[in-house]
Length: 206
Image (cartoon, rainbow, N blue to C red; front, side, top):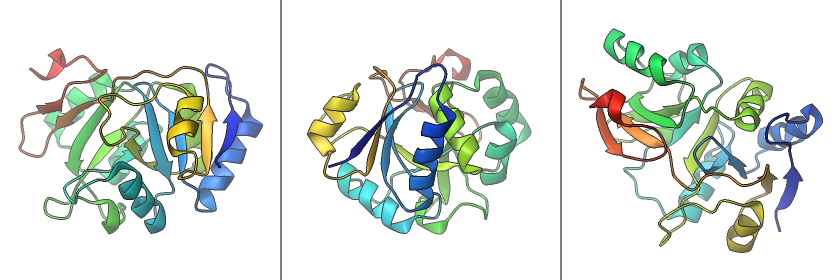
């Protein structure tokens, strides 16, 4: 069964954050809270972690994985952002949005969408997620914890343990999370296109 690590949702304990980051570096698959809902996360270059996420979520080949970033400077290392997209994205981050953009060479090939070479990018407004990414020193490869057949992600650690406790290594318990996935905005065709309306307000992209 997964290890449950309790972390304060507003003032995350550095020692607990370090424990989770150490596990990620060692190859763990975790469930952790963001500003929209729980997500699955693993180390950026962890091919086995990607395969485990695909298996848990039963994902197809067209799925865009996400690089969970700490700030805009880090995000810019992993995705290509033109001037128009820069202004729009900058205005709404950090926040509950995932932006689909062309990946740079820093993104492991295994997590790029195979035909378009795109990837999702996020800067969450969540202390636990931000502290964890900061401790890692690089983005966390992530995917919304939306399980097959479900309409919304589980909101509490015990629900995740009950459903997939045998399939993840760590569940970060930081209280009740949201049940709306992030709003997904695709910038790959130039103009922003909302492909999933979720926790983030869509009006800036209309």
